[in-house]
Image (cartoon, rainbow, N blue to C red; front, side, top):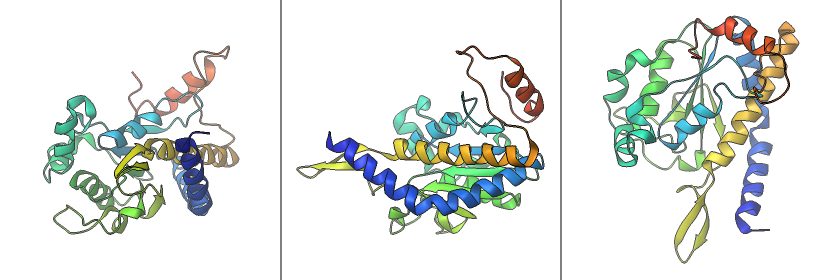
Length: 239
């Protein structure tokens, strides 16, 4: 087997073994808040934004999920532009109207390094709203200084850290001094979908409702998705 797949398997195994207790705890807390009318909101910049999008309107995925999209922080704005904007200490305040936190909401900030201004400011904004705050990040970066004016890193602000264990630099292979083969999206997606599967199971245990989207590409009734969208369309734009 190619060394990349071996390294991914090892990294995923280590992450699951280490993070399983926190995933169970986080899933229980998220399910409690969804039962009380909250939704899960996700935020990330650049490639981390891809994981926020991964969870949204996903066949087999959790329904009450809202990704927060700030266009200048996405790769569509340009790779160098989005990278620069992530370090801008004013960008979250300038896009404050993109955030809409209600009681019982949950906010998950995705940032592998946990050191840039935009993810930290987004977390601080959620903190001021007194909602449950989580991060998906790699604690291997803890020695990397924060770029935020407060000097705080993301893990110092959130309530629960889900550690992806991604090595500094992201690449999991090395060749003559070059680090390559990134794994943050692969591992992050697995941990995220594992968490959301636990949430769905716990919501069903509590309410008898399984908050999942069925695929439009299989022979399923349209009732489930229509009912789910009807429940959350006031908070989440599915159009």
